[in-house]
Length: 583
Image (cartoon, rainbow, N blue to C red):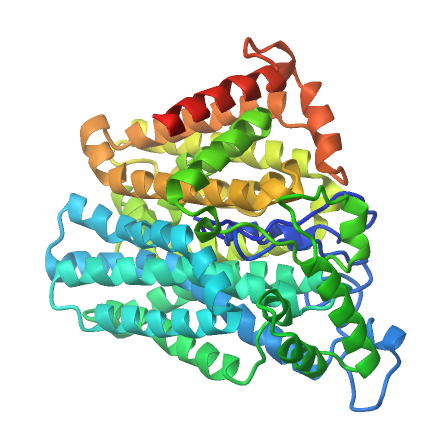
């Protein structure tokens, strides 16, 4: 599952309206994996020819030590920026690794502690308890203590969680370690992406943030490789080393981030003007560029989204920096914060429903089950045993990584709606293959192994082409700037909640409904969501939130549904909210 995941906040939202280039929106894909209401929003813009690793046809320009003009420096990255990106992207690898490592560790854990099906589900799902907690508090924590300090703290939490799991004497300690790691995963996703978007120059921000997205998929692949290799080298106790790797990688990021400056954008928001100026001087290649970015960041920090409607074109002109969002603490109480979300949902009920369906269906399509329980699924077929069952996850990880990179590069060329419908359709068809594989056994009474294998690969490809990169991109595009952060935040919490439910019910669901039962549910949910997307979500390529609102009004579902128009719905829900608050 690609949870990007992404405090009560979601992945920092990206403003996509008005883009003309194919690569312009790739940075918005970071949504999956990471969310932050508080860590403000970005509008990265780049041209197809401006690339960093993931861009096609152009090699990364590395700055030399020779002085450059401002115009020249805008087309290249300094060696300092490359190091900063590498250090921040380690967080993406950690994010993916800690989500995927349980796939290789679970078989050995099950044998060592004689785990029941319910205990196996707990080991997988308890990570998402920590993720949910981290999503709820991470954004506010990131705003209070700064991006750099938050990264340092989460790296230490990664180390603590890894150590707890390495030394775990019983299943209870394993569950505690999983919750600790889940918290670190969620907060890390917020802090790493916020730091990266705030230090990166606008001309390269899209590609740099997309690099982090690719690193998350790379983290899954590394987790599968580590699980397979360590299971061969250490038939017993290898799972301890698998979890320990996460702590080692976190130490690398910890030592690296200590040498980096704090985000100048955050420093300005805290009123630390001199420190922000010094940070820009360290980040930028020329004094002229540093002064320009400092002035642009100051202009953005003067924007008050509680009293000013920010024009999208003005945001673009201000170097696509971060727009402030209210944090939970600024509302005075959680109740006020939730009331504000309810009011905003009433005013944007179509977008709110679409965002909810995206968040729920991306988990109930069953892709997380494939990633976490793949060895168990293959072992159930009877054709794959032990190492061979675990080895098949390498193919899943490699396919997932390659498809993610392709989608990042081609999302604008192919189109969001095309990718979403085709990807979700592929998931539905692949889940149906799994229904057939486990519902109609072969002559030996075993599920049809190779049909199941094709089904699992199909689910991984479909998800990597649709829900994985597009959920957070679409949600961020549907909402206006002043609402986007909180919308992403709510979506993130819903996503982690659904991830917990799906992971906690798979094996027990097979016992109650039969081996094919859960796959029937995933198929139905996927097909229903496919129908919803076809009749409710328009093509959003290059559109502003206002244009998307108009396009949604012309979609069949919103055009003919029985609900009241948004204005009336807003009035009704606001009245309900007022009554509830008064009560």
